Length: 233
Image (cartoon, rainbow, N blue to C red):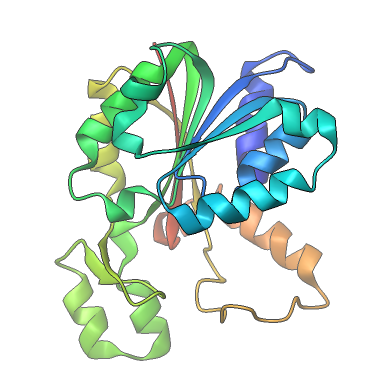
C-alpha cells in the first residue's frame, strides 16, 4: 500500500515538495515515520495512549531532522477541528480506522475539511464486498454464508467491527467534496497468512503479484482491504 500512496503523491505534487501530512489514527506511527523520513512534515493523531507511547519512543530514536519534522497529538479523529485549522494539510491519511467507527460520514467530512484545495485523502478500509472470502478460503462455510448479507465481522484481535462497501464510500467522498480518484485492492492473495509469519524467500515476487492484483480487475474487487484516494475539489 505504501507504493500506491507514493504513486498518488508523486502524481499530484512536484518531486521534492515537502508536504503537510496528517495521519489520523496513526497507531505506532509506521506510516507517519516513513513519510517524515521522506522529508514531509507529518502530524500523527492517535487516541490510544499505548500506541502514542510506542510512536513517541520510535520517534525519539530518529535523527534530529526527522524529529523536527514530526509531531504527535493525542486525540480522537472526530476532533480534528479542535486541533487544526481547515485546509491545513496537503495529505490526510485514515488507514485502518473506519472499521471502528459506527458512522464514518461525519469523521470523513471533518477530514476533508482539513485538506487544502487539491489535497489527497487516503483511506484504508475493510472491503465489505468481500467479507465471505476469508472464511470461505478457510473452509468455514457457515461463516462464509453469513458474511454475504452483513457489514459486521470479527477481526484478528477478536473485536467486533464493521466493513465498508466501495460504492457507499464513493458516494460519501463525492458528498464531502473529495471525490474518488483512484482505488486499489490490498491483500488479495495474502489475507490468510498468519500474523508473524516468516518472510518467504520469494517475497519480492509475492509483493509484485499483490501489487499487480491490487490494480487489476476482477482481483482487486475481492481484496481483503481497499485503498481509496479522494481529492479535495
